[in-house]
Image 1 (spheres, rainbow over the protein chains, first blue to last red):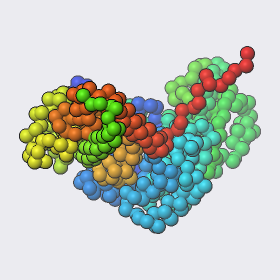
Image 2: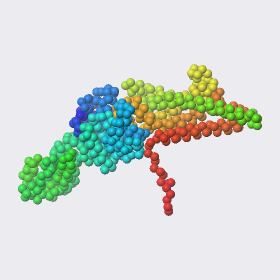
Image 3: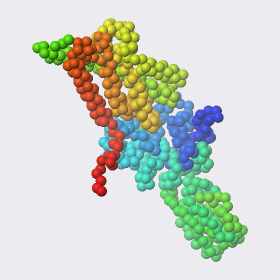
Length: 339
Length: 247
């Protein structure tokens, strides 16, 4: 649905030029919720604005729903943007219009008139759960309610794609959850493809099917959450399941097991202890429900060196579990265990 | 010298003030209308053709945008820096060309509009610049045309600031309208000059001052009321200092 190829964006020129995006490649499948996570300054805002060309890339191509936006004339681009809704961190609502008026703005721009416009706006407000606030002005509404109007306005043109620029960053945790649930709901009900950017791992955990990690204008890794979890050394997976730093006892082996899908329900650790007679200690564990699937990460300490534990580790791997040896038995944590 | 004890003094005063007020309202009103019609687009052009503005590159040409910006900026600065009394006289040929004469209230409208348009254009510029750029971005993301952004976002969202700017502009038009009285432009200014100054009638002078003051107050009040009516921003929380505290 969204295809970004070799997109770069440089601000300024000459010695003062700064590169905000550096050869970005992204593929967002139709109907999925794709999260781009990164620290502030990573280039997230520039990236999301490059999708609908609010920020024109210096080079590269952006294709949405089969249409290459980067080659369109200004008039064609305007029409193409109607298929791409966008919501903003600070809502960007017109203070002089009511909730309904703000939704109607989107419809007015698209050219819906009269009774049809009134009917559609109320219908969308109902979808976002704000039918009773149709006549309230933004200044009379809470942050969560404002963002619901923002989403309703973005839906006015019947878009195929919804872009979200830190839509929940200005909201408290509880409101964040309700807004994310709403995004998930319209994703399912309307079959809308969603690309969201965020700095909160919780957002990715709660609703994203796929994710990409952005740092210094580059994408470090991307893919479906399930495949990222089963990728050895994935920084995203480590951030999804932070286990903290636990110093191992000297002479022992520390391993991290990442499990997802079916393997989450099996008594892995009990089997390990029984079959090999090992005194397994659990140093840390994190389990989450991601995209409706149980997934998690456990850090275990096994007595003896990694070499001595070769057989049980091989056994775990043969069960389809991702096993990483993070403690080398000499009392140090090796690279790859940062959480 | 006018004799205030003359039997027809008060009816004469009333007649003169009535005509003067009518002329003042007429020239101020028409000049104001022209000011809005020309000053508002001019102010929008002033903001729009700036770097990164909405009309940065009209017809796809950045150069054209820059040229327009420089020209408008020059005109606005010129109009605002020439003292009105000089402008009024310097514009006589133009006034004659447009109105056919340079005497009377209709003729006075030309210099009044010429001085008020750049003034209001600056006010418009300030008001439009106050609009959050995020709102423009939101409208662009919805696929709005530049005209839609101006008519649906920029002007409505700055309406209350625009109204307050307009009331400041009216006050200065009224101020200048008194000055055209010195060159036979009519209005309350001419009443003050002819009767109050040249014929030493303090009563005429005081009456004119009161009338102009009342007109300004009414317009100012109206503008404040309208501005508040169109502002839907969150009201600032009531000052804590006003809450009585028990000690």
